[in-house]
Length: 104
Length: 101
Length: 205
Image 1 (cartoon, one colour):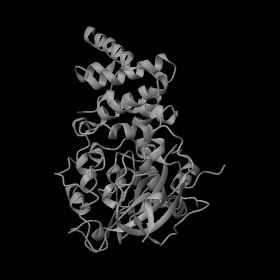
Image 2 (spheres, chains in turn cyan, blue, purple):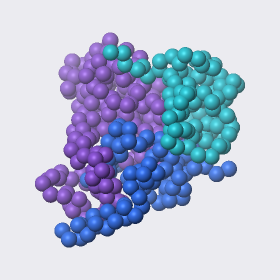
Image 3 (cartoon, one colour):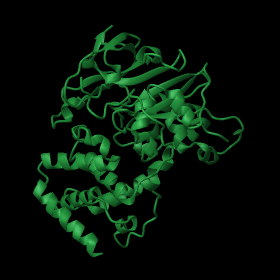
Image 4 (cartoon, helix red, strand yellow):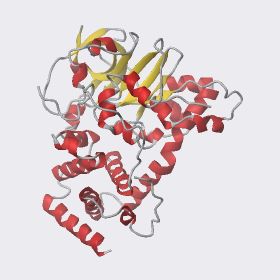
């Protein structure tokens, strides 16, 4: 039996691992899974997680199709937070849906 | 720009209570209820999250499983599994049962 | 709020004092759904048991196995859900990314938006993980937060925070501490705490 991989390659995708991307600086109403603290920030694609039903639609009873590509994006903490108190090498990683990303 | 109440990453806050206080019995049962409903695909976890976020300022006044319960109520009513009136009647019945014991 | 071991022959809710509004609401919702045949009391009882006795044991066993079996470790890091499944642990809906601590990198996990957590691997998240202050602060000042848990990470080690904000779930694979040479898998599992698997502490022999 083939099990779904955590990060199976999505068939068509806009961004590749290693590419610099920027998270849209947008504040649409309703259920979103892109935290405000990363909006407008730029980071590097760490991996492609695969394609998933869109939670922004699932939250309201729709089926969330067509699936959206989900990426893990890596940010430097010094770039996320003014006056970040930790090490230069500290990073934060989280998952961002493709429609929230632009080339940086 | 107003944020939904759950979107709190990066906000200033005080010390963390690092002790795990576990769960009361009713919370364990509430957790099993939520989990059974979402894995059985009766409702989606995404709907529950949205309903919790829609609590607005009450989000901060409620404890975790109180939020879960309020969100479950909202989504199950949306789906038509019961009405507010049916829930109120059942709650009165449950309360009477506890008081009688 | 201690954990009570309940005698299930009577309604154990009484043990916790007069029920709150939300306890009553939760019970009422449950009974309405049972009456309509949407769920059964048996399903809930089984679930509660899984969360209490089954799920919490799994994480430490998986990591102890990874410490002893390099091939399993690689498979776990490559695809957490598949590696667990092949080893006999069904993570159900959770997709798992295992994060390896190294001498250069210390990982710590949070869900800032709610409380996403690999429940089928670790059981219920601790109250601090779900707390507003953890969710607010660990993304912005992870080292200060780790210090509150008694964990100090050297400046030349990267602290990498993972916000599990969408479809993935995460577990930390801590470094195996010195002084555990020759230990059995069971003994290794006994020092792998839940807190170490979330990344706020490290295992000690």
